[in-house]
Each structure stands twice: as C-alpha cells, then as structure tokens.
Length: 234
Image (tube, rainbow, N blue to C red; front, side, top):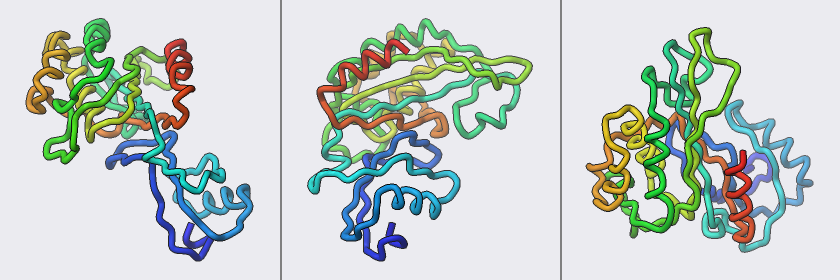
C-alpha cells in the first residue's frame, strides 16, 4: 500500500492469525489521501503481494470504520483429516491423524459450549485478556467429502465455531479437547467440566495451527441469525 500511495500507512486487521493459521476472509482497514480507482488499486496490490496472499475485494468505508471495534461476530473452521498415509495436499492445511475418531462423542460434547460463559480454561497460558467471558453462537462438527484422498482412503471433518470474540488459542484448545474425546481418551462430559473449571491445565493439548482458518468476520448484527441458520443447512 505504501509503495502504491507513497504514504505512511497504519493497517488495522480484524484479528490476529498465529503462525501457521490461515485466513479465508481477513478484513483490514486503512486511511489514504491518494485518489486511486478501486479496481486499479486491487489489481496493483495483488501484483505486489507474495503468492500466499491475495486481496479478494476492496471498497471505500465510512471514515470511522474500524475492522476490530466494529466486528460483532467471527467464524472459524478447523479441518481434521483421518489418514493412514501421508498427504502432501493437506500437510500444512489440516490436522492429520492416523487414528479413527468417535464423531458421535465429539458432537455430544459440543452443547455446553453454546451461549455466554467464561472460557478462561481455553485461553493461552499467560494471556493478558481482561475477561474470559465470550458468547458462542454456533458450534458444530461434520464430515465433508473431497476427491483427493490417497487410494487408502480417509475421512475429513470440519469443526465450525462462531462467537462475538475469541481468546488467544481458544479455538485450538477447544479442538484439542474435542480430539481427545474423539480418540476415547476423555469422556464427552469433560467439555462442561473444563469450562466450569476455568483452569487452562484441565483442557489438555492445543491443536496444531495448520488446521485453523478464519472463515468470516461479520459487521451487521441483523444478518447473524440468518447467516448461522444458512450455515447449519450446508
């Protein structure tokens, strides 16, 4: 942006993504004085970016728009693959497991997550968040189908979660506990027990970063119920 405009830029992203985490819909805002047509701006920026980053759209916002403060809901998805051979396609894009998962137990563990709770048990160790209270609107896990599995076959699960905000490592720590439940190492009742404990050490291991994707950031409160309902129908 600074190359194209010659201006000093303060770029504000809608949220952090840790090393190894992906973003399908990161939102960012900045202020410039330059009068560059939006279509040309989009093409120019993409021509300057490395291959692993792409700008999908660009638009003019209200002067006081703030990509963090104005967001009211974020949706993440986490991909888990059960494979019995290596996969160069998914090695850095999903959590690869070589053991089967009890998807029924994992689904049974999800209801306690819905609603407003103190999720301190799932925050990163050493987090400086003022409060662990967040509201989760949607939480589900389901199988999905792809055609690029190796001849030995495999299973692909996608965990989706939407909330008004997330603590650092919160999604990955929830997934880590879910996988422990799916592997039969912990009972599904532990989800409620861990939330109630507000103790990070009770939650278990953190899922690796490569399976996590920031899927969507929402700014219109009136759309959230419809978006969530539509998502459940997929």
